[in-house]
Image 1 (cartoon, rainbow, N blue to C red):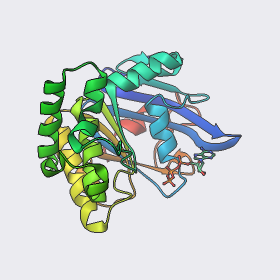
Image 2 (cartoon, helix red, strand yellow):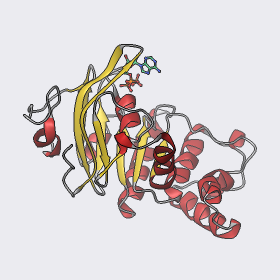
Image 3 (cartoon, rainbow, N blue to C red):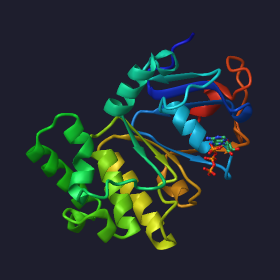
Amino acid sequence: MVAPPDNDVLWARGLHYAYNGSPALAGVSVGVREGEILAVTGTRGSGKSTLLKCLSGQLLPTPGEVWFNSAPVHTLSRPARERLRRERFGWIDSEPHLVPELSGWENAALPLLLRGIGHRAAKRTAGEWLERLDVGDCARKRPDAMLMAQRQRIAIARALATEPTVIFADEPTAPLHNADRAQVLRTLTTAARSHQITVVIATLDDEIATLADRTVTLADGRRASGIPAPDAPGGEGRAACSVSA
Ligand SMILES: Nc1ncnc2c1ncn2[C@@H]1O[C@H](COP(=O)(O)OP(=O)(O)OP(=O)(O)O)[C@@H](O)[C@H]1O
């Protein structure tokens, strides 16, 4: 097992994953640098979500390696991977999944409160993120009184509030109207950059090309372009995945 280069916060080699024998990833290798915004694109079913789930430790590649800050995620126990996700990673889904009984600020503050941060400090931090994401006026509203774009911004605030090392965003603009999509993407990437948060974002939005540092395209569970490297049989290898597009 060869440890990844120091300047990659996330590094994956030869990822394979199959659902009930049906392959979703077929040898994907990728490196993500600290503070980088990496877009993962590809047609529906190309493996974007599965790649994000493997990189974030939700799914275990079989076979394949995932390293986070030079620690092997693929050999961690399930509780250790859950702790890693809770403490170092953030996740933004294509649906906001807010708690309907809680207000905007309470939803955004939830991960802080779960970490034991005091009520007042959590409320202040959540409120600051809501302001940054232009949903300060939703702080006291319940999700059912918000527009979908506002709910999704609250979900983004919730992911950013803990200032995780890496945020994974799986088609975060999917539920939004065209007019809101680019703006939400811009808000997310600007906020992440201002706090040096690394972002891995799966999206079908063309707008991401202008906002991300680099784009990796998947097709049928593989990198759509790349130079095979000798150390990654079946994958694209380190050389290809670190070259900026
Ligand atoms: N839970 C699951 N059970 C069975 N097959 C699955 C499951 N999740 C994904 N797949 C299949 O794995 C392949 C890759 O799916 P994945 O969701 O990773 O791709 P995607 O590029 O994110 O697609 P989409 O844009 O539609 O979300 C597809 O063929 C999909 O049907």
